Image (cartoon, rainbow, N blue to C red):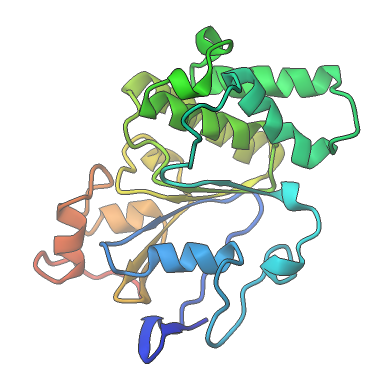
Length: 247
């Protein structure tokens, strides 16, 4: 697919597929097109050329919305939102179960498991508006996990989250992939917590796919999969030799 703002192409001939049970990371420097690619995937933007498909249909035509879970980088939150952590996480089940069906034991178990996955059980009765920014982000991650989506898209989900919560978060993602064959697309500058669990790393550079392959192949070029706020953009711009990478 290609996407352009006027005459300026932000994405040029990008082709990416994420299969069921696959854990894929999307990385690249600022301005590489990551955010635009996500917005096209979610149906917020229409490609200038080419096509986007979610489960075989255009994003706007997806009827079972629970199949797609999404955690934005900084979820919008009303300052005086009265909902507790547990209520916010439980809302993640509604897209799957519907508003009319009463919660069952399995729904409560999923909500419990999701809160445990991001270490929020002790804060379950607290209002989300009273939490720190990192704690709020964990609540929205748990909300997405509770819906047990077929595809979970996460945009910089671990920013501001402590190491223990990152470990729990990693365990919950691998459980989603391995036990439920869900697909995960993770956009992040920090891959250290999940580097060993990734199936593929997709690197965008100047609106095109520069690399798409196993993390070990990328690491073999000398690229660390840790924090990339500085070093990955340098590598992508050719200031650090990436070695023989597959385009």
